[in-house]
Length: 425
Image (cartoon, rainbow, N blue to C red; front, side, top):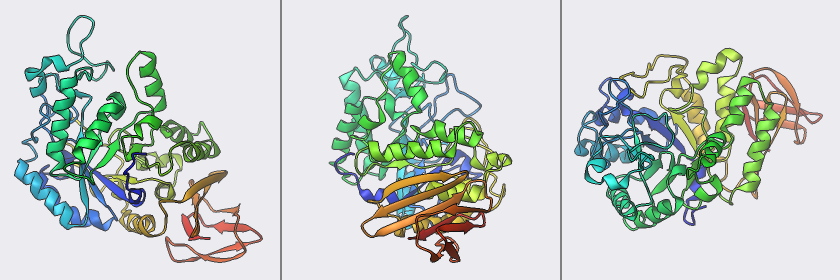
């Protein structure tokens, strides 16, 4: 881990906001009124998806992707002014939360200010034209970190923003040299020593594919030297396979155990069921998955939890990145009460120094987190079905911290009614 990573991040919750689609107004100021509700979910961080101007050349959709930014030093005028952003950050702080912004340092739009001023900072195809290494990201061109002056420019930008915000979510961080991120972290710390760094690392198959093509792609174990939190994309394909029925729950839990035994002490993987690049988890309920159990399962895992705006109302539609597509806040059932309870458990019950273990009994996940103060057990029936499972607990009654009801263990077996269970052992 980065040597100064705060272990308390393990027990925090990030809420991801796409300003364009969060409110009808789609502005910095419009979000302020929703902050008390978001805080009530147990949220510690607001992550603002990219706030910079969007390029017009090769734009996708009518308004373009926020990940095709045209100027690292400015804010998107569609959202308001810099002063409006500062007002929003102040309001986030007043609610007891912190703010991180998205930084997209692998690429820019083809008509970016940086390309106009410094075309030498950009990757070139064999024919000499600017382009990108992935191929199907048609609205962006890649930067070339072989140019040392680019490092200076990019670090200066991060230092600028670190005077206002509390952290950075770094888009496709795996494609940017980890040495750059280490330097950036050190220089940002001079103006904001508490800045938090979240890396969007990549799916294992994608990383393998890009490395086979000769593209730089840092491995998660190396990236931890520069970042406080990393995406859990290293096990995402296994989770997707479990939901699709192609692998067992035991297979997926074994990979979580591999994380526990492989990554540095204090490792922090971002835990999520959905984000702006993934399907809504509620849309998969048609396959019989139980949303409450999956949500509680995710919170119980080691690592910072992520909520994607709309998840709290079980939204099934993924808002477009490229057009105005406001979240339907009446889309589904309200999970706010469950999330608030899970947030309290995340903050007050689970320990940053817990040792994680898990096993499967069919589609019931039995997870344990243990430290010197004791053990916490989570029982999650991921199909929402009644079941009786063998547990390593003394016979007796235990209090379910999620609903304050008693759960009985008899003859070493626990009967669950299909609702998620979290208890102190």
